[in-house]
Length: 267
Image 1 (tube, rainbow, N blue to C red):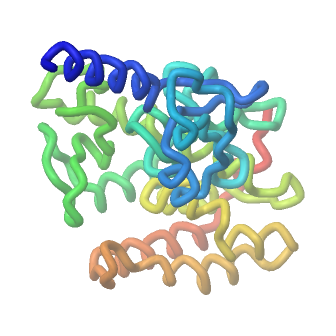
Image 2 (cartoon, one colour; image 1 turned 180 degrees about the vertical axis):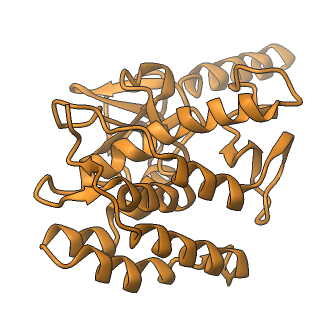
């Protein structure tokens, strides 16, 4: 009887062994998940690509934001990823392509860095942010336990945190460059204000926003920013005074004149 019980457990472990493992449906990367978990997260299940699992566990694929695709972080060749948009394990992330322009988006200007630092605040060692998410440095959202992906020892110096912030911002400037039509001309203050907003709200929210849609149909950028940015003042289901103030600062930066063009990217 004990032998049969152990055999049943072994067979069950074998049958479920591929859950959360990588799979490929045709040429599309995915993760083996239950069909219910996949569908509830907006993914698509494909049978026959997770052979060690029962019929209720299939290869789950998902497109994310406006230009990304869910895949394991170690297979994202662009290095531009965002968590929280894909089903499955934490390292199954939204991978964004490199900027579609022949030129990469520019680094944000000093005014943008100062604005982001002001509102994110400096945290030398991992700690919860105002809505409980683990962060470190200037708003770096931890991807692994104890922010193990950060290439510096804790506590961070401000210089290390600035380096980490500049690396993180590449994901969000690439999203903006991909989402905003090349017909839209933005100076470095306008692009920087949107980069601060994207860093705060995430590529998925930005890509599906009315703000980006209005820019892309040719509406006046200053008017669009003044009307749309203040709407993004909610976190954790509540209006946060800090977000109200941040959005106002982003609008002010957006409307600050500059002759430096940041979008479309210049070679």
